[in-house]
Structures are given as C-alpha cells and as structure tokens.
Image (cartoon, rainbow, N blue to C red):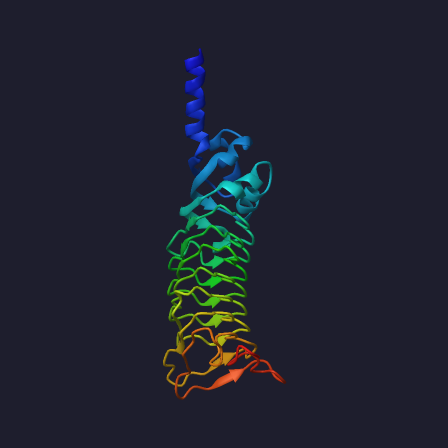
Length: 287
C-alpha cells in the first residue's frame, strides 16, 4: 500500500509539479470549457505550463481565459502559448488585455496567413518573461502598449513582418533588453513612446525606413547606447516628426555613444507641435 501511495505521489509530481502540456481543439465561445475539460477541472488550471490552441476563437474566449477561478494562477504559470492552430479569430485581432500581466509567459507563437492582423491594446503588457518574439506576415498593426515591457524585461529578440504598417503608443515601451531593432520597409506610422528606452549596450544603430511617414513624441527617447541613427534614402518623400523629444538622450550632444545622426538629402521634415520647445531634447540630452 505504501509503495502504491508513493507511486501515485511520484506520478502526481511528474504530471503537475512540472506543469502540463495541454492541447485543446475548440470553437468560438468554448475555449475555457475546452481547457477546463482537458485538465480535469478549474482547480487544475494552475498546472498548465504549455498551452496549444487549435480552432476558432472570439473575443469572449480571451476574456474568459482571464476570468473565473484559477485564472489568476494561469497568469502566473503559463510559460508557452501556441496559437498557430488557430484557423479564425474574431476581427482578426488579439483583443485588449488578452494576456495582460501573464508574468511567466516566455514564448508565444501566432498563426500565419493573415488569421491575425492586429495585436490589440495592452494585449501582452507586462509579459516580462518573453525572451524572443516573432510577429508573422499578415500582422499590420500593434496597438497601444501591445507588448509594453518594463524594468526586468527579458525580450532580447524582436522580428517584425514586412506587412506591419502601424506601431502604436508605447507598443514596445521599455524593451530594455532588446539587442537589435530592424524596422521593416512598409512601416508608415510610429506613435509616441513606441520604442522608449531601448538602452541595451548591444543596440548599435537604428535605421528609419523610407516608408515611415510619422514618428511620434519620445518614440525613440532614452535609446541610450545607439551609435548611429539613420534615415533610409527617401527620394524626396517628406516625413513628419513630433519634435517633442523624439530622440531624447540620443541627441548629438549626449554622452550615450551616439556618433552619427543622419537625415537623408532632399527631404522635407515637418514638425507636428508648434511653439516654444519644438526641438526640446531633439538634439541634446540636456534639453
């Protein structure tokens, strides 16, 4: 009897102590019920470490995953999220705050082929465990605070698709561990604070693609260790820049390692803000 009890304990620890790998096949509106069934009850949601979701999803599915008993614990224990099996998502969007503060999340993979086109507002805010992120072709928009990071961020690698057009306010705010940033040609709009505080010493430079039409306030502020900020040749195409500390602490007079700041020839640059301080912090960290 004692040996049987010990064996049961070992099996329990093997199954639940390290967390479960759970795959669910679902239809829109039934995600939570599918997951609860797969793990054998609400109390076992805490055991999910890796979650793979196949099928169709709607906005309520994401909301239900955050609500109800056990959900707070899922936010603290889920390490890997695989959405590649998603065949249709309502409005083609990961909705607002879908995985807000899933603090243990290290990996997330998205379906390709345009199943998702928009990362909603604050969808992955404060997912500080993310280490690498690849957004697939088909995604056009990352909304405000979509992947907002913070002190303690582990995100070192970011790959953006050629289909990306808009990066919202604070979308990658304080991605302080990011080692390299390549902005895709085709990107048009970079909103305020989009890449605020990219201060990893391995970040050696940023090139603004010719397709960019607007760069918002403090979009690249406190990008402390850039050596070079350049604009790709624009063939005379104009660009609008906030003028409000857009490259604050990345200015020519700063001591952050920046050696070159290049605007392309024959380019008209207009500034959205008017009045005193239009270039405050634009070229000098002291401003």
